Amino acid sequence: MKEVTLGYIYTSSKPSVEDKLFLEVAKEKKIKLVLFNVSKEISEKETEEKIRLCDLVFNNTAGYLALELVKNIEELGKKVIDSSKTFYYTEDKWMFFLKCLEHNIPTPESILLSSNVVSARKELEKFNKWPVILKRISGEQGEFVQKADNIKEALFLIKEFWRKGIERLPIIAQEMIKSKTYRVTVIDGKIVQNVLKDGHGWKATSVYAKKVERFPVDKALEKLVKKISQLCNIKICGIDFMKKDNKWLVLEVNAEPSFEFFEEEHEKIISKVLDFLKKEALKPKERR
Image 1 (cartoon, rainbow, N blue to C red):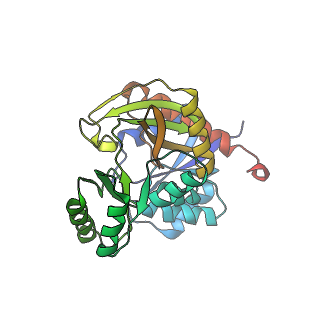
Image 2 (cartoon, one colour):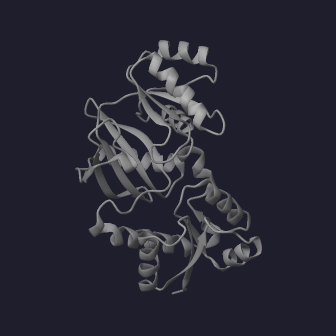
């Protein structure tokens, strides 16, 4: 069988525990990894030479600098998992909401607020779902996501978002669902790990989860996961769900899923990721 060379994009200043695990497991599987560290100075010539060595590139970070590298790689004719097109939905919460709405995928009710405070106030009063969750259309690890109990708090938080940000990025108002967060890690439309996240407060996603455990996966969730993966054209991701009236609601798709919720499964998940990437890399070009 042909030896496979995979590109690996990461963003930490030095290889993390996960990056080292990828290297170790890849070596065991006789897969060569070519590293692209977007946190270091990038030489265009050196980068292009490294890209040409790869059969396929895996982007293990959702940062914007990595996205530019992904576009460069695609311009050179190399396949990237996941492609730059997936960021259209995974990194823009409003576009993801509209996509769900279009395809009847249940998600918390949301509105896009005006950049004018007076208009935003009227929109929130009409929306009238208190408490309300305010979030920028883009952000990582719960950044720029806050809860407002009333119109006064909401307007204060909107102004705070604008003050802290470099520019006035659009803000979404979303109904607050009193639910724990259910995360599934997905490879090629299939759930490979499930995590129930409890934050002892209204935030239970990402770094705010204080406790994690497994939960039973039903057919309805499997069907939703497959549909979302296909609509967003994403192969490797984490999807966050909540429950309302005992029914699943999708919250968001994460292009940079965590593989380390359970330490004992970390290496196994990475092994599954590499097996999938190898399979994709070995596909004849005309079938891609």
